[in-house]
Length: 68
Image 1 (cartoon, one colour):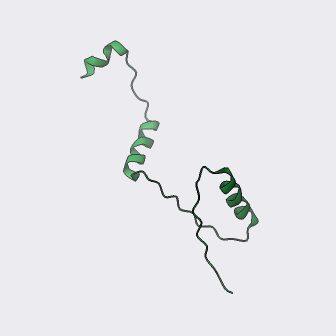
Image 2: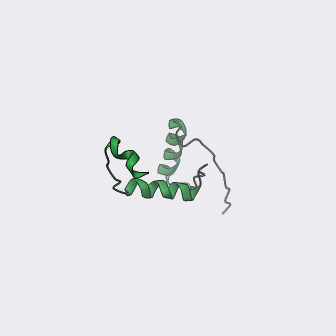
Image 3: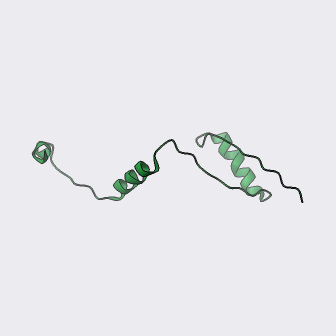
């Protein structure tokens, strides 16, 4: 059995590219290994994700300067 490897690079926001990848995935003929290369620092992304999950703190605009 001969095996060939093809690497595809595509814009993850491009609807045509996503449709083609989805068709390849649904065919069941190919083994797909995906990696997403992000231009952002993984530590920074993790920090933002933790922040999204936190409840935060509400305060009035006039009290904002009292915190400094």
